[in-house]
Image (cartoon, rainbow, N blue to C red; front, side):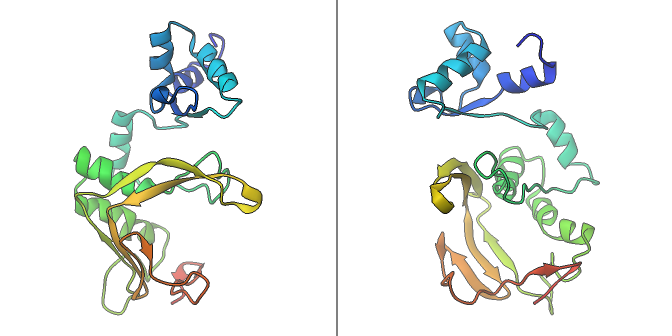
Length: 216
């Protein structure tokens, strides 16, 4: 480990032990914290936990922008556009779905780095403007009624969970959204109080985005 790049070593040492059936008390603690407590090398800890759990132990490693002071400078810069997606690839390793609720829960409410109204703008009209989606991003007469009703006091992103609902029982990571009271698409109530309001097998109000304009 001493011969690897410092950036990778730091990322590994600051990884969180996200799942450890043999030692659940280690979960959500950093590798460096647990290794220091046990008096062993961080790499030895990783191998030990992997072998103890038949390679089912999971570690969550920061890929980039793990320094919150640096992230604060980025997200408060007027030129920054917030957004992240792996488009469904690596579903068993990554889950970026919690970005909007994490932004509103952590950076807006908890750290008060961004005003609530600015957080909403960063998630709605700002990306629509940047990507040229001319008929979305604002609540305005004549535009599609796409509305998200949020409880600002409770909105946050849940912990990552592993579910096995892919074809052939394959796994993927999910993160639940909390504090989302209702989802309305094109004026149709889609979801309320964490329950679907429409039959997913029936007609749905959303339309495919083509080019720079969404079809109603």
